[in-house]
Image 1 (cartoon, helix red, strand yellow):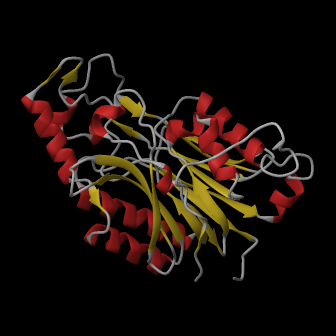
Image 2 (cartoon, rainbow, N blue to C red):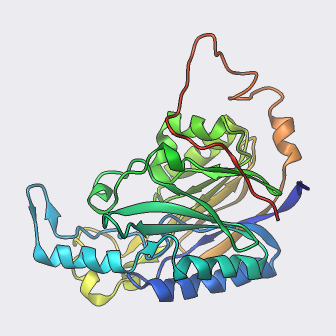
Length: 313
């Protein structure tokens, strides 16, 4: 496998065309084309970009009761979520192939068998192949009304000509064991799609870069209440501001240097040139899964995590 050492990575900060799978994929296509024109080789989209992160929506739930309207809202969200595989994943793969880039796409994945939804990252090679996925292992707070829990079998990592790629979704990145599951695979480019637009998220991204001695691509949405259909806007609590996600996408070096961003309060493509040789330099004094370990004291085990998948093109 011939590996590129220096190349451009990017992430898309944008909001969905909410609850409309086809129009959201159309929007993604425009951004993918823009990234290709700018020479991006690895492109990251936010958490559940398709069909949108349902910020402010309660699906008619409070502790102890549900509403019929909320069930209808859930059904609509389910119907616009992504079956894997499907015509929609084939379309995304064709976009990655046409653009000649490695694509990671945040989706809400629907399970046709048991009807459960999952918060998922899909990974597409520049050949157009869907090479794998990761399901969020612990949805946060009220997200648990919407998404089920993934398991260790999709703690996926990929050995590619662009280096070793893997990552976690949103507050999974606060789970030390989940991070170590990535670090122990030698991940060099760590993706972190999220819905957290607080300024504290930036420090989390910098910490992970320093801890893992890896490049980190933190990718968030930007959207406000106007992105929602009117009937959905009317269900958002009055105390929520007009802007539902400010963004904060960022790209960080293995020594914690901010290479791009954080980008706030607008949609956009964020890019940075990276050099995988910097990872070697950064590990001279700290390697969390190498010379800085104490396996004589600590034991670490991940249930059902797959071996790193080799992906070539």
